Image (cartoon, rainbow, N blue to C red; front, side, top):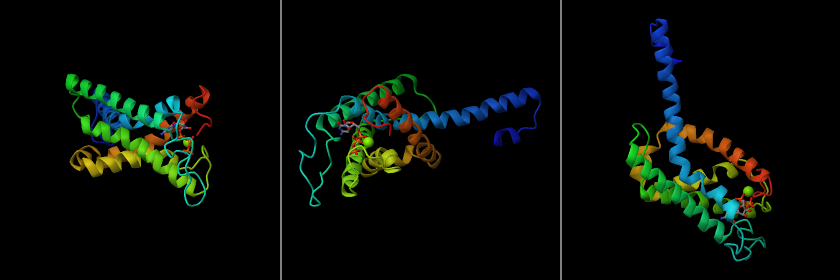
Length: 201
Ligand code: CTP
Ligand code: MG
C-alpha cells in the first residue's frame, strides 16, 4: 500500500506500482523460505526415515525419566541432516547458475549449520520436554514450532556470525517467525495423513 500511496497515478502507473508492491512482498517471502529450506527439510525427513537405536541409548536422567526418549534416533538424525545438506547443495548450485538478485546466498558452511542446527534444536527441545514430564509426542506449543529455528540460528551465530548477520535482516526474521509455524502445521498434517507422524502436531 505504501507504494500505491507514493504514486500520483494514472491507471497504468497504478498497475505498475501494484506490480512493484507484489514483488516487494514475494521476494522477501521467497528469500526467507530459501534461507530456511536446509533447516526445514531435516525434521520431516527424520520423521519419515527415523527409528532404530535411540540417541540416548534408552538411558534415563536423574529424574528417572528418559534423557531424550524413543522419538530421537541416530538414523533420523543422520538421514535428516544429510537430506538438509543435500537440498542446500542443490540450492548453492542453483544460486551459482541463476544468481538471483536480492535473494540471500547459502554457503556450504551455512547449509551444514542450518541442517544440523535444526535437528540439534529438536533434540534439545526433547531433552527439556522430558524434564517437564511431557511424554514422547506430547505437544509443547511454541517449542515444537521454533526449536529448529533456535537451533539453526544458534549454530550459525556461533560458527558463522558474519554470514548470519548479512542474511538475517529484521524483515526476514519476522517472516521466518510467521512462516515457520504455518509450514510446521502443514508438514505435520501431511505427515499424520500419510502415517509417518503418530500425532498431527
Ligand atoms: N525422529 C527420529 N530421530 C530424530 C528426530 C525425529 O527418529 N532425531 C523421528 C521419530 O520417529 C519421531 C518422529 O521423527 O517420533 C517425529 O519427530 P518429533 O515430533 O520431533 O518427535 P516426537 O515423537 O514428537 O518426540 P518428542 O516428544 O521427543 O519431540
Ligand atoms: Mg513431536
